[in-house]
Amino acid sequence: LILSASHNPGGPEGDFGVKFNAANGGPAPEAMTERIHAASWGLTRYRIAEADDVDLSRIGKTALGPMTIEIVDPVADYLTLMEGLFDFDRIRALFASGFAMRFDAMHAVTGPYAKAIFEDRLGAAPGSVVNAVPSEDFGGGHPDPNLVWARDLVDLVMGPDAPDFAAASDGDGDRNLILGRGVYVAPSDSLAVLAANAHLAPAYRNGLAGVARSMPTSAACDRVAEKLGIACYETPTGWKFFGNLLDAGRVTICGEESAGTGANHVREKDGLWAVLLWLNILAERRVPVAQIMAEHWAEYGRNFYTRHDYEEVPTEAAQAVMRHLGEVCSGLAGTQVNGLVISRADEYAYDDPVDGSHSDHQGFRVFFEGGGRFVVRLSGTGTEGATIRLYLEQFAEGGDLAGTDPQTAVAGIRGAALTICRLQELIGRTEADVVT
Image 1 (cartoon, rainbow, N blue to C red):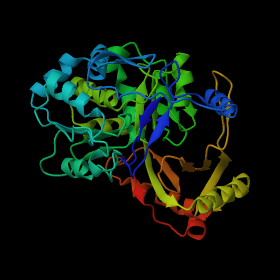
Image 2: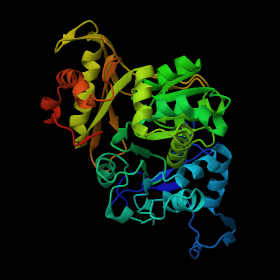
Image 3: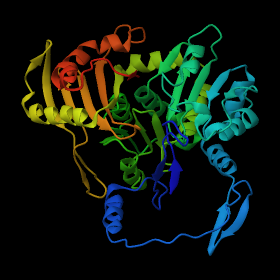
């Protein structure tokens, strides 16, 4: 049982969550949670043990009634694991050459890990890790590593004193934000770059078994997989869907558009792992982040991509949007909206290739001729009301892919999406609260 506020505001007036991890260390799959839910209907009582608090700061074993509790040092265990995956000597040499980094732990769990790894073990300059002391309410902040809540870090890399590389992780350490001097790396692009360059790290030198992405994530990694000759799986949002693929050995690296990336070393997304893989790539290639992105887009093309979040939407209004899309979706193919021709539209459903489980109602997808699409889904990760997530994507190749603004590139898709979804009429808004 994992007790966490995840990436939402924490504390007595904030958010609190309980996650259940299965025997493989990952989130419980739907088949298991359905059995748990069914079993809950048969509960008639529960018992409480009155006992003193356990001293969580003391390493070793202690007792709580008849139960034995072992307190471990997770930082030491994690550091040992990472040293077996990445070339710490190469990364240490990168920092010794004058390479500058800034990591924002956002007053959350990764602070002690980042200090121990980046500064103490790899030799990053003292002070490279900021906001490193975990706080129950995340220092009063919002520990979501995006362009809004990590604004100070974004402003730093876009300014005159920018470090070579910057990153952040969220409240429970699974999401990540990747930045270079003058450049923001979108999560979908980060997944694609990591898949294309993973062979530069010792753990992945022999190649990848496959890659997987959540359905709303851009198709950037699909073309990397195609070139590598490996499978690429599309799953619903939620890391539990990657667990079966990882356990079956079908994929090595997974990612989702909400800044979660990870690999087969654990069954969860891992923010620090992603940062270390980026550092390993930079240590081997010795070119700026901006150059890595430009060269990647020149080789594979670019999926211009953005997510618009409409937060704290009254639940009934949000559900009205989804009902409307359910009514019109099947008749959209072949129609033209704002000058764009719709090639197909559907409500996404997933059949797990490993255990055969079926998951439906995973969001609506509308595809356009020319490589564009938008996705609409409701998110359950907000604290109040509902969050409507609108994902906009437009593929392009050739020309100045690095210099084109993503919001400009997807403007036509956005206009069509607002028209089709009737957001102005149904929720009274056309502007998102958060644009990533």
